[in-house]
Image 1 (cartoon, one colour):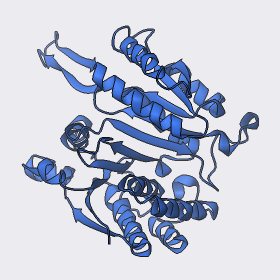
Image 2 (cartoon, rainbow, N blue to C red; image 1 turned 135 degrees about the vertical axis):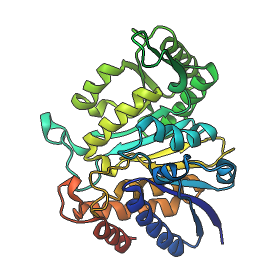
Image 3 (cartoon, rainbow, N blue to C red; image 1 turned 60 degrees about the vertical axis):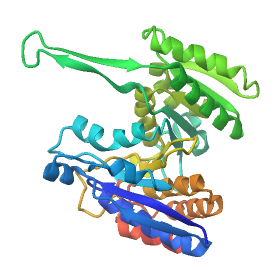
Length: 354
């Protein structure tokens, strides 16, 4: 029997509600499909940070390297500055394990109401996108600093870093994914009209890589224009590649247009598989609903399907996605989707459909 070791990091807020639900789904599915998932729990969280001064203990990343995948919940707490929590937990894993390809699919699941559907003749099928986010450098490289802190002449710098190797590999990844999708379309998101160094390199390398993929149709759009295109012409898009910051913002818009942040999954991939990849819902810790039992677990379940696909279990991944779609089609929804069901009820519905 095949066996996979999974590191479970629920983290903060509703991560501690949706990750256990995801593990229950995965264990049930593994038993039905004839493979084994062995989970090990890590208490890396803001509570641990407040208690010990560190999110990740000494030697933690070395231990994490030994796993086949990482199942991550969320990080962020009201009493910890956001830059401390993000750079204390999520980014050290993403950057330390060279998870340079962040993959965020968006589509309207059966039964889910998109704010676009019905407007100017738009249908649910108009949204079927995959946003590829460069996940290791760019605007989130961490390069910069502050001097003269607290004084009138204080200065802060935040430097975007675009390397030829980093840009080329994410564009190649995006082209490979676009080639596998039925429409074979790839849209480059940029801001090279105003950012005349890094983003110009970003564009130049895209078109150099494009020469090796003549079967993939390409177009280019400025990031501000992209927001309007996603709303007004969603069917004109398919696979999208964007920088760290741009894709971070656009993927949240994509999730909202698909119905809710509560259904949106993410894979942080190390495509060469030198390190484990990390899978997480994009909704964050959501302390406003933490402890109420109403967190939407669908994003976590879809994320789990992406993890199974990555592990080499496509049949199980497809089975899970069908169960998710049957559940949404029956409109077993949490409040974020306009429903009255809680996390447990949605989990039970997906379990019944497996």
